[in-house]
Length: 416
Image (cartoon, rainbow, N blue to C red; front, side, top):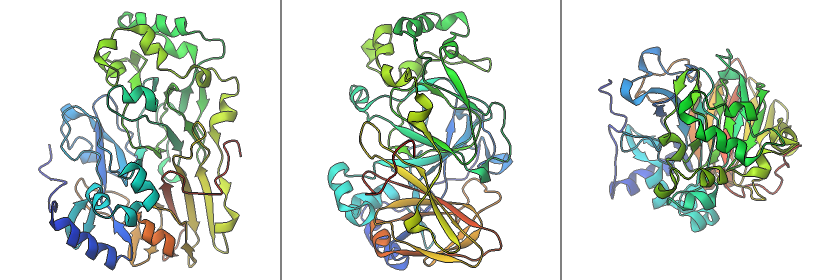
């Protein structure tokens, strides 16, 4: 296990204000973020998120391998045995760190916008790279109503498969989603009854979709899905609730506790309640792909000579615009000004350049605890004023950025 402390040099309490003000002034509203690594005890790292091969178990083998990197996060990872800051993003300025969570608490309107901060009192979304060697269990994330039963928030999420992080498919580049039309609640209940009989057969009730680089999916809460093995960029609501409905994956047993971890304790053996947390209509939708599949859409208003801005995550969840994401590509020698008018969190996936006064460089390999120059938090102040981005390299400069609730008046509809 590593002696490296990710929180080394962390400033907290009253000292955050002065450091944050200096960072905001120096970056003209841009904040440098450091890599946020998250392990999962029940998963097998896919090894495509640039982490050094010797560092995938730096939280300890008992904690599992690191197969996630979180971006612009003020959300804590719901892991057993977690370090206290697991899942939280750090800002870096002049060798000192402070939590993005503390920065938002200190200057919320400037960082995330007045409307978001007044309603949520935090940055309510985040994104991650999720990188697994094989498929993971068929699971769902609770609705806001169901998550509230255990003091949590619901979790709609989305997928995008960046070509730059998917040079190989790994073991199973297909994702099971939803349930076959005609499936009945008693069919799922029977799978839960067979939990300890071996494979409970829930995938027999679903269908798999082949994953395609450069496309994505929108996954509402309550919808079953078993993500495949492409490395995925996942803008989502700021929650880490889930329930796993599959008992065995690739020969590995999934404990019952991972099914019911975010359900009321008195309901942990109530099969009707557990099945009832699924959004049945969305799971058995006869046009599931049409409702949830996302092809990139060019934003003509923010594309120009030498640069192209694509919508990669769009659409609404139950009529609400909760999060969205874009992919910006700038050709060598070109530059553009981003003026989104809403906060976003940026990760560079290809090339070299600058954003305002901050360098952008895509690393080939990252040591655990090493700071990088590929991640930036674009505050509401900077996004409203406009940020100049320039390609200073010999290949395209490509960045992904995600947004919070109600960020756009021109968001495409799902199915576009």
